[in-house]
Length: 109
Image 1 (cartoon, one colour):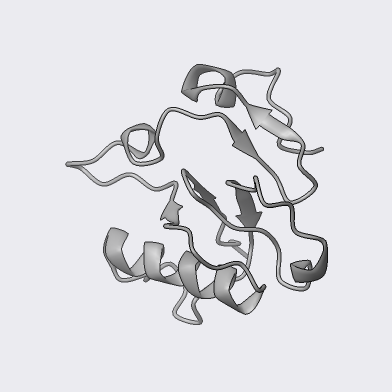
Image 2 (cartoon, helix red, strand yellow; image 1 turned 30 degrees about the vertical axis):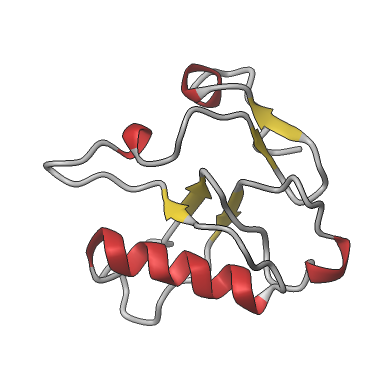
């Protein structure tokens, strides 16, 4: 069974249920919560909206969320800004896109 994995960054989100412990610097989250339509997220705009909905449900507002997804015309790396990115615990995930894609990123922290 395939699981949908959305990585949202640039002004991003966290996991549902962490709203009370969110850090104001949070700009990155990973989720496996799908839209209910399998891999059909409605393109980049739909994926971004899904990430925004997850963030809002978790009590995170006032940020613009971007799904870390590519299309034939758009590279995911170009959609998320330059960094740095922080998770809900305030841990820096990466300083920049190169760090995000390196073995030294802190995505699992």
